[in-house]
Length: 372
Ligand SMILES: Nc1ncnc2c1ncn2[C@@H]1O[C@H](COP(=O)(O)OP(=O)(O)OP(=O)(O)O)[C@@H](O)[C@H]1O
Image 1 (cartoon, rainbow, N blue to C red):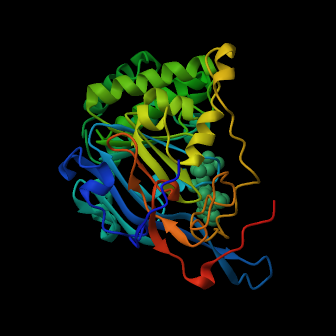
Image 2 (cartoon, rainbow, N blue to C red):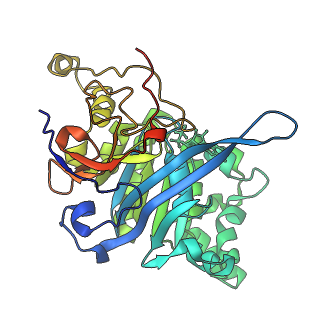
């Protein structure tokens, strides 16, 4: 299986991303709405003492290259703590990147001041995991949904705003007559619909849905997923759908990006990544997805990863997945693998099993692999 060519020293971190490298030449860059290059969000690790000295760096997002195409749903998956939310927040600059760039519709947003950022923020919204926590219990649905209209000066008169709130509630499948009710009067699914209506108020082009269905009952999850899918098509939205649940992501996404320890390690069409992944980490995630019928269980091999996810404050050298990878071999501690085209058109994986391509590590970076 392994093709052990050493093909060069292309750096994966902050490397100029060509069309060929990122999308395997299938679409021109003009189709990209949001783009990250070498994106980093590093948090200081502080000691517990009174002086609170900085003792290290936590690499929540650590050199992400990613394109999100106009009108697509990109699913972002990975285990808890791998940096999905931090990446979603950094794309909207709700957390400040510490390195790299984010481009929105051709504008580098990393250098924009507050005013310019506010204008741009109208075009990008967020749907949060827990609709109960993200909605103010003292505000009616009308107040919640119309707030972005006021902030962005979108509908000046009261009557105009009321009409827009009614339109937004209808759009998400709620009766406009509920506008004067409070969040506690709704079910979890209905509250999430209010959250989506609020996120749509500014007429955004881009929505980040961060674990938007995780807190809902299973029966309601499908309804909210279908609603997001319908809205995406009807409004031409570009969606980043963040979830730890690969089966949900496969269901709604056009493409899937897989994150491990702060880095995108595989990306490509949902059908390819969701059925024939090329990175052993994705293979392990996929093998954990329940099959629709027990009789199919025998046809599939469950890949159990060794050990726990390393701390993002102590990232292994070379391939960061190597300490848990069943296929790790000689170059893995020494070369940080770059995303490279492999498998289906548009599929990219950062894995030396498909040819050794990446940045050789400095010797002092090398962290010994933990003993089994
Ligand atoms: N403000 C912060 N300060 C310090 N560390 C943070 C901060 N925000 C996140 N982290 C850390 O960054 C890492 C990535 O967190 P993040 O929430 O982005 O992961 P995630 O993949 O979204 O996880 P989950 O699915 O559990 O939400 C974690 O180790 C987390 O503890």
